[in-house]
Image 1 (cartoon, rainbow, N blue to C red):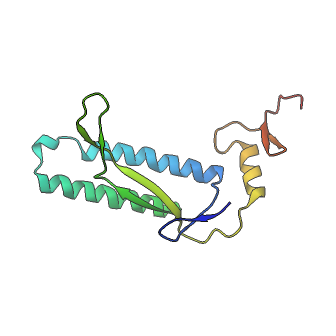
Image 2: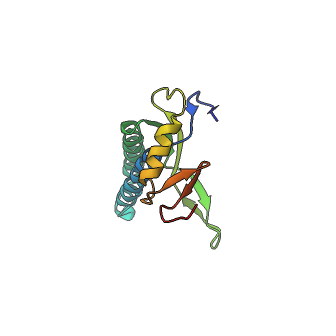
Image 3: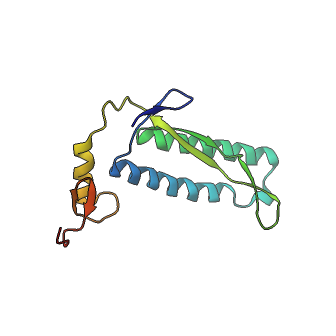
Length: 137
């Protein structure tokens, strides 16, 4: 199933290796966000904004490097359920791929799933459902 998002990029199903790449970028981005937000008391307001904008650009570039277009908002606000106070939580939304993916490659999806490239569980597909190699099916 392919749908177009508001920016016009095509959204497609993700292959296991693409999901893994996205997760790795998210982990790195989260670590960097924590580093950028450290010692906020010692930084001027403008320095904080500059640091967050730098993090936003760095995150967008990391996703571009693995072939995805994202929107990043380091200034997204949520309200803490316990205290009711506003908390700044970054928002990252995958909008599409940098290149036209064409038709979804179901054969590649099956190969990557069978080899366990996403979750480390190698197996086989039977009627589009993952089955453990030890299974009697």
